[in-house]
Image (cartoon, rainbow, N blue to C red; front, side, top):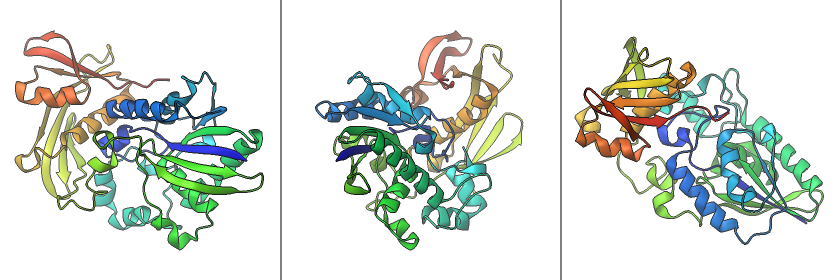
Length: 334
């Protein structure tokens, strides 16, 4: 009997910034790194013979919780990737829902006919995940293997293993970041021992427990922002049709130093105090990263906003005419 521990990656930028990331190669958040530490403690006394991961940064980094302390090599397989989202890659959830609410409703309901241009469908991702798991299991008879993949890919793989009909795919719940699903391979087929166990993740580190769309007990509005750019360097944020904030960038400033400057970031009063400012940061990352910028920078942060920027990874690197210079790494890791 081969045991496979199928693990979802730690919290990544898409989870935090509320952006659609399938094959987009996002980074792990600060909270995600703490989840990885918790995952390492979970597997400390669990015998593991091999470790596999999708070839995306967020899974390969999460896999360090197991392969580094156990001194094992990391093997990668593109078939373990998340569902390919096509023309929706790195699009804010709020943008996609506003542009085509019916399409997003079909996606959220795991409609078997759903597919975006340039992307793939739910059945396709489930098939390739199980194809990869089967290859791995056959290479490791009677061993224990940790495999790192992605939320939708894992759900669809489990659906296929359980022979769940397409009209019931939507009944499979969402797993938290670093949640573990245990599979058993008898040489010809998989059986599911348990699905999406995240008991190693304390409430304060849980990604899902912070998100209103998942919390059934919350009556607060779940806001995912969308953006319009009426002029170069300016992005106006909206919650549906309601003005929600603005983001002003200076793309020509320190471009040669690979820095991306934020001139101004602000939410409308009714949207403050609701953890939405991080979505504006996500928009800045989305603008600057394709331009080859490795750092977000701010010059002269007021005391009221300082706590926010520190929370999301900014640190002081110098001084400018307006005060201190604060910086956050956003560059690719490969």
